Length: 622
Image (tube, rainbow, N blue to C red; front, side, top):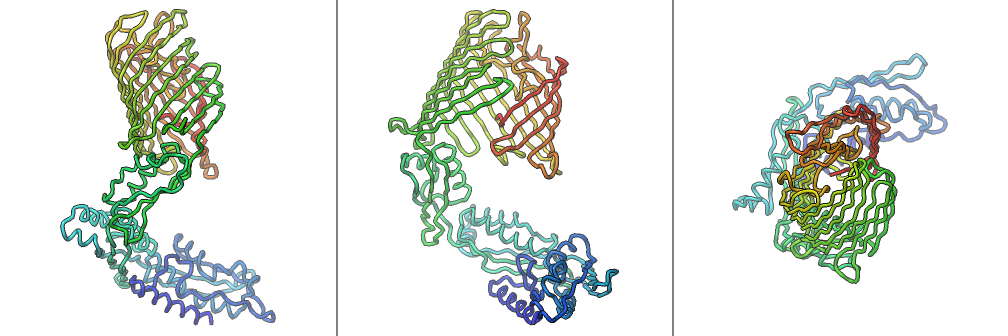
């Protein structure tokens, strides 16, 4: 009965294959766990029959042996023969059927000329020993590939449509099982699925395979692959249908859509739309998809399903950093104050070394995606034996996309600085600024591959009580590269540079100048303790350059989120590039990759000060 049921499954499998148009010289399944000619699980024997236990040895190359001992019935029943009640007769039938079952399993890996023999001996403990010897032979490789298209995609391509021609070429270029590659059933399935995914994500969500075939020549060890894909209709963007909105104006969603009716559909455009909605900070969850009904393809409705955040939100936190030491924070956000389509945000931070209040009014995006803002802040900071008090007022607008953030604003800044030698300096500046941030990383919270670039530019006029008044231009950039080396080794490279262009006698407010040292600068030195010396005290400079290189690796496979790291930092701030002298800091660290961001503990040695220093920080600075 076992063999009959196995044969029946072969016929059924072949019929299904032909019915789908996915013909080959042998029937295929996506997974080898149920090989077509595998014997059915033996039925429990009558209680009067003696149960058999046995040993199984599989002599095969390592990767194929793993496949066979995972899926062969002989292997599955070896450890549970007594419990399953396999009789001597059933054991013989399993052994006799194992070569054919093994060959079917090997064919899924591309071995169509395998030689499999089975023998039976008696082990030293007196139990039967079943030996399965496998000679896989050569592996079949893809010799030819013939991909064709049908449906609207092919009609557009024949008419010379550039987008259709480009898409067809891209599908062929990205085909993951080209001629010359070893043929495997899993690779064949992945290639077909990948081609469908590319087509469905780029304008044709109803695409499907019309016919596929893999003709294998077992003697020549080759496979000829062919397929015809039916693209179905090309989908164009239709009306936006919003679900789940009650607290906020629907214009909030429509103004950031960037999906004009009649424009081509693509999965990437919907994903970017979804990201823009999440970044607005009005929704807990957002799902954007398209109605897949081919009848509406000419104007496919875009469905936006959201779950709104509360009108008001307050959070508190406690923290520690090299800059502020211990601190407590309180944040409050109102997402529609007095019925106004915008947000009010306030943050208070109180610590032994830093005190801060920030307030911000920011409108919802307009029909062009821009948001107007009005912000102010007051800060008090004790760092490097100096006390600074700074007030800012900003007015401008911002524009965000999936990877790029833009901020344009005018700023009025006043600064008062009490230096370590007791000298008090005050300065103020009016400036126009443009900030640009670009991120392309694999994970925004825990990146391991990608690049972030932050650029700040500004120009204005400054006055002070200790120097001349005058105009200035300020440039600053911070760039971080994350790159995996393989073998669970990861690198992180950082460059930070800045310069204020102005006359030597013009007094610039301290927050617009530069210092180095601290967790996110040159480790081994305290926060803001690197810069030019004036009257025996550290001051801020007009040029800055720091670099950092870090190599990290998980401590063990069991603790994959706990890494150790080695790093080298270098840099300084100075009045001019001629007087610039970088200092070094290096050491070892521990990284814990928590769901909210990395926790870093570093032991760094500052070569200039010849001292060790511990740095503790949480999160990523862009």
